Image (cartoon, rainbow, N blue to C red; front, side, top):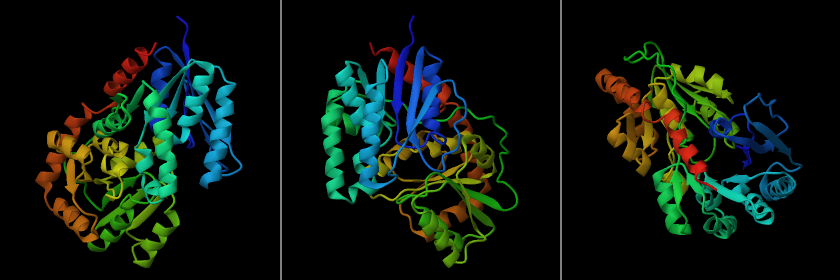
Length: 367
């Protein structure tokens, strides 16, 4: 049987995109020839060898409207002259080239909604930009019968809004080797945040909460739009000895850092529907390593924590309230151990070995 060629398009660098690495590896092992296309930056590291092909597009512009325009034009012509059987646009910022070239070539287009793109904080605060991305969504999604997203809440919203069905394929990691000490870690406890240092992630509040927390360190793994601002915030509040910026880390490096944590942070401002309906991959990463987490009291976390109490829920991002909850957990060894046990149980349920079966079924039914 001839293997189907599928091109998957993202707008980010490919080095740190664990989600797309898992998806492409799965497709390569199940009768497809995937090609993952992304963006090349000045500081991009060499791509490691994978079981699928990779391509990075270099742009003259690297931010703003001109970047999005240039990247989409370059991606359009790349897809137009590249042979494929299926093309999968990941999020609205790459769906137009995927959709238009599929129509021109008579091929199948798939939409992968990693987030509620027209409702991300950077878009919601800019009415003209928001209207443009909503136009993109209305122009494409209702005409694409094969769509999937990362959680039930988003699937329900998208189906209601665009009238096309969405499968749910969660962004969960592979099962991690378990070497978990079912007791609070001794010595200085590590509070871990992993992900982009961007607006609305509650990072400012997390840093300021360290004013009320002793014998702990906050480790921030990643970089982003707020990198310099957050470093300045820690310094201005004399918290440099408590807040450590570890920068970008590759997946294999992150796997060595995460087990050292005592608590994981997954905090978001309730300032956009994208955040409100989110189900972050870091939430599942913490679970896999047996690390309880502090999360927002949003729908997806409510659902999972009601079945698997793997962490605590927070209603506000007040630094004092964050600190109080963390200090309370540090003084309650019994509760902490119970949360760890729930993580171990949940890890057998939320893992890529199980979730990828849904991805395989989704693609196999596309004719």
